[in-house]
Every structure is written in C-alpha cells, then in structure tokens.
Length: 127
Image 1: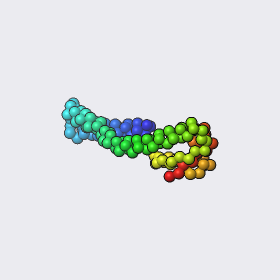
Image 2 (image 1 turned 60 degrees about the vertical axis):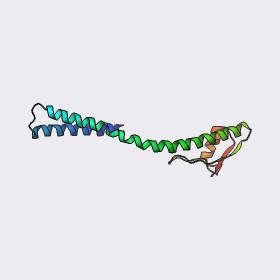
Image 3 (image 1 turned 120 degrees about the horizontal axis):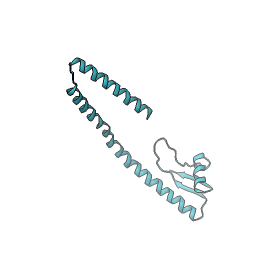
Image 4 (image 1 turned 90 degrees about the vertical axis):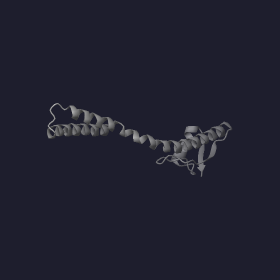
C-alpha cells in the first residue's frame, strides 16, 4: 500500500504539472476546456484496473480443483483417525506454487506438523 500511495501521489503531481504547462502553452485563462479534458482522462484511467478481472478467473478454476483435492484428502484423514488409525498414508496433492505438501518422509517437518495438527502419530503421502 505505501508503494501504491507514493505512485498515485507522484502521478497526481505529474498530472497537475502537465495541466499547468498545458494551460500556459494553450493560453487557457479559465481552464474550462482543460478541466474537462483532465476530468475525462481521469475517468478513463479509473477503468484501467478493471482489466485484471479476467486474470483471476483462470486462477480461480485451477485453485478450486486443488481445493477439492485438498478437502478430499482432509476427509480421508478425518475418517482414518475416526477408525482408530494413527499412522496415516494419504495421497499427495497438487498445491499452489510456493507451498509445500505432505511428502513420503514421515519425519519431514511438514509431515510432523500435519500429524500434530490432526492428532495422528505420523502422516506420509505418496504421489
């Protein structure tokens, strides 16, 4: 947010300097036409951020598939624990880039954290 505020403040300052320069160049005393033109440009610029609306749609579809797989595995773990199993073997799922998932080594820190979270003795996952 601080970077966005700084950027917007800089753009506002640049726009006001440009407006002052155009006023002198075109010798506009009242600034009526210039104010109208600047207002139109600012209104057009307000719609520019809407272009990113289409980008998340593809991401949402991919993430919803991953979420369903993750929820399915959570259900399998819950059912296994309810059946009295403490050493769990689950299927590895595809996670969001930058995140890790439960792996085949039950002593790996992520597997141990998942086991502690679920209250299991150990959890491991195979592809």
